[in-house]
View (cartoon, rainbow, N blue to C red):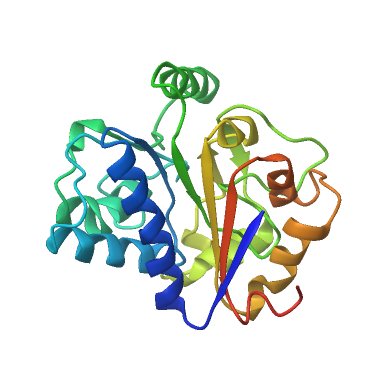
Length: 241
């Protein structure tokens, strides 16, 4: 792993955006793996500015998102499709027909997961995947478990995840209890991965991801087996390294 420590949250986004710009200059029709939540917002803000400045072009890009809440329609204000539209897609020249987010309303999650993974495989797998990390070490919504789940799947969210995400909802009771998440196997097929984290609350998770023997109880630790991972963190998130 290549670990980059910066001073501020904004710098995390700028460093990640540099990698995105280089990726799209090298391969304009790249397959991008995108994430939601507060951590990648600095990246998306930086990418929008780079686009406005004429430094990056998304016209040939295809994107796949990591996850979506079960039970939320795409136009729900807390859905991840809505998040991506408002925080990135509406501000750049990406083809909306080539942006894919798991369907939170799907009836057969297993069939959907197989189709989603097959679509990613048919595209040649993800060229550049962005990841955040939960305080419990989850990537995507792959929660700590007894095994690594390979494929895109429906997952029961951990209580710590539900509590952490409740800040985006009126009440913790409104937070969905399940999600559809890209699996560890699909994530690991990505050619390049950026893991972003900010704040002291993520320090232990970052330490476990880098130093703990890979185990499903620490999902992000699997990234130690990937050949091209860049970890971008601020000083607080890096405080236990």
